[in-house]
Image 1 (cartoon, rainbow, N blue to C red):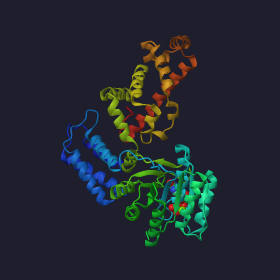
Image 2: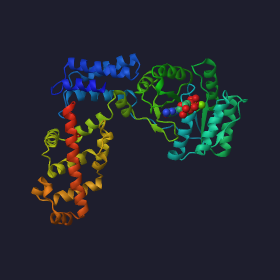
Image 3: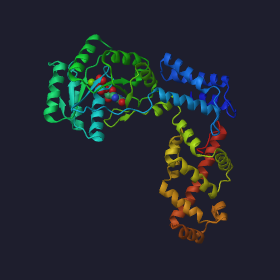
Image 4: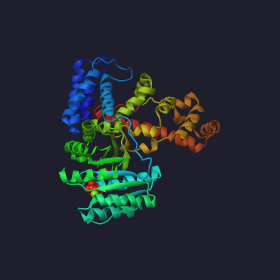
Length: 439
Ligand code: GDP
Ligand code: MG
């Protein structure tokens, strides 16, 4: 689908201004992308309307094609919709801070409790107490206890015969005595939203007065996640959402819908079953994911900020025609330096991270300085015909640049490798659609 979006983009490339029809064409693709990513239909409609209004009649920035520009507007709006900057955890001024985890059965409450406790200890220097308040399944208490052992964190439990509210009351006392400054309550879930469960959660909330109530939602549940989120929020007033199982192949459109329907921020995302697989929520990354474009947009943004498009085009042509010299390499490096770390940049190009030979192309900042020195110590002739570099020339260049002969050799080899790689790539581009080079 991202391909279709790009094909539509190509069609309107080269135009000076975006027409209404262009925007309509683009928006049809965007609508498909969002629906496919499981975004709620109402949310999609409202969103497409906002974006269309912004996009029509926009002046085209010099370094972006109109298509890219529309996509950029789409992405900016998506990012905005999902809450811009993510909010940190609210800590109580009077410890312990109480965090209540709620959600349907299997959403990932218990797992996330462990993950979040790990983050709190590591990043915030806190001492969490985990509370087993899911008394309906003995296995649930055991699961939390096992987890506690695994991450070396105390677990408070009173078995299955004591009510969750009473467990919570005693846990709070226990935390004060033991100077545990965060209390995390792992509550029960059900397969579906249910009155009794909600009442129990409300009772726990009244007693514990939590600083945060995190709703844990399985991202794979798609559309249903929105209704679930709304029910929990109506009953409890959640303070934030944790979206789990984003390591699966779901597009994550639920994130957008949940945010739009409840107005509550998504604070963390679960990226796996392991205890270190919890990440802060990045609206921008989620927007890219929903649009299914990797981080192409960030790449466009970087390019737009720093690179002179015409120069880049010129270099690209030289690249493709194999007339690329070490002088061009030097210039390319200047451009790249403006854009940020090279390997990071390359990783943003879809498919690029899987490309063979890229390991050799990785260059860090310090190496880049040395490479620059080496090339600058070479004569113009040597830069154009590096194959002329014999032993005595290499020695001269190494001395002149304050490097070693083996470093000079490495650079020459890298340059050859790069040329080979480009040759492969232009072969690929010839077969399929023409791919754009990193700069
Ligand atoms: P609870 O019923 O809400 O407490 O859910 P659990 O914490 O027991 O999790 C249910 C299942 O989902 C378990 O098998 C977890 O390992 C798994 N799980 C939780 N979070 C994630 C995640 O972010 N990624 C993946 N792949 N699995 C997860
Ligand atoms: Mg559980």
